Image (cartoon, rainbow, N blue to C red; front, side, top):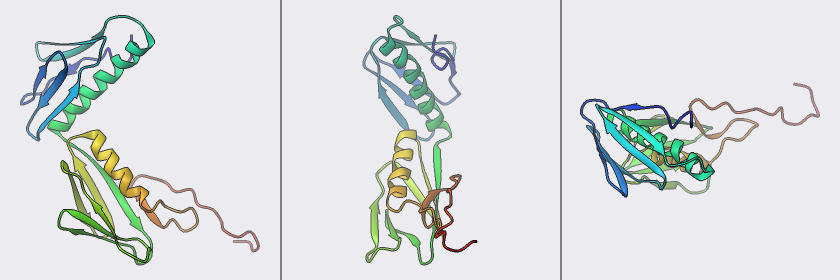
Length: 179
């Protein structure tokens, strides 16, 4: 059995899960999410507990077993608590500001970079810190990764956009003089 797939999911109060033959829908206080049903995997709900079982032990179905359970669990957590990622902006003169629903970043280029924030994701800016939040874990992670990719942190001074919990391995620079 899959270690992830065999774990049951307790459905919190205020969350409704609808299992169709082709999709699984989760709705809660923060919104609604939907994911397609994977072949070879069966989802059942009994007494407020959701369980995921698989038809056989083929490698693709074994992989889909754990994936389906993880996707459903992420949807349940998303509609109850939501997800967020924090990004930091490091560098002299580097700035970020909200311009309507878009991010305006001044990150050392000759022009300002405008990032259009997709629908379903909110970005909160406080000085040099950005918080990306939403109910879809995949979308929040993708938006945070796209913002970070605009100016990755460099290893010499650490300038760029990095995750708040990320450690940048620093290089010493020129080896001509001892530091």
